[in-house]
Length: 80
Image 1 (spheres, rainbow, N blue to C red):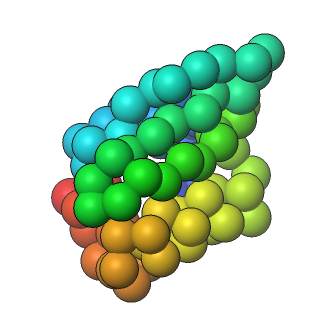
Image 2: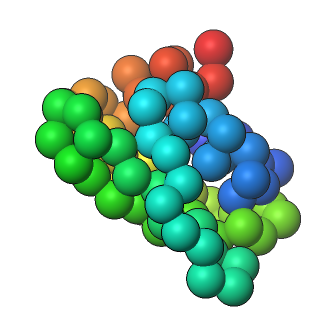
């Protein structure tokens, strides 16, 4: 599945909240999101409009690895 090209940081944060992530803090234009299940995992999302493709790919790879999914499986859950 192809990565969305026009995704903002705020939209990614909303999508990750569907998976149980919640905002724990914000410093400037960066938000730290934390998920407590199955184990605690933190990810930092820049609130840029739009996110750069490399940044988005790195964030999604990190989340997919933490949840034990492939990137395509994660994309299907986040953006049906």
